[in-house]
Image (cartoon, rainbow, N blue to C red):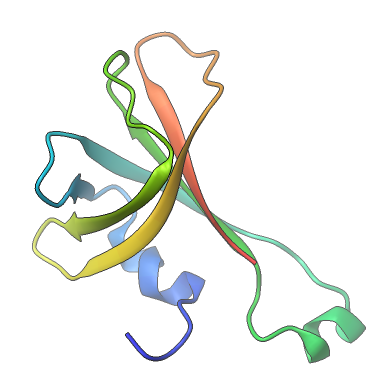
Amino acid sequence: MAEPLTPEHFLPHVDKTFRVKGGQHAFRLARVDVHKLDAQEASQAPRRPFTLIFSGLPGNVLREGLYVMEVEEGPQFELYVIPVHTPAPGRQDYQAAFN
């Protein structure tokens, strides 16, 4: 994809499953957090910063790294995914941040 990814690329896929291509891990896109910028920052930024938050099963944690993620019935994206501390029992959360 030649254009920079934006929150709008991912918003239609909230609550859909993203699978690691060629792997066993699958995650639900729980939300897209869009970071607010003041007017000066917004005029200088190439895009609005945002973070994708995924939820998966606990145990067998996917290691931090660059993965091709395939959306159920949709496109695929190359994302740098990081497991994050998840205090809620019964799940493991991950993030992909875009600055």
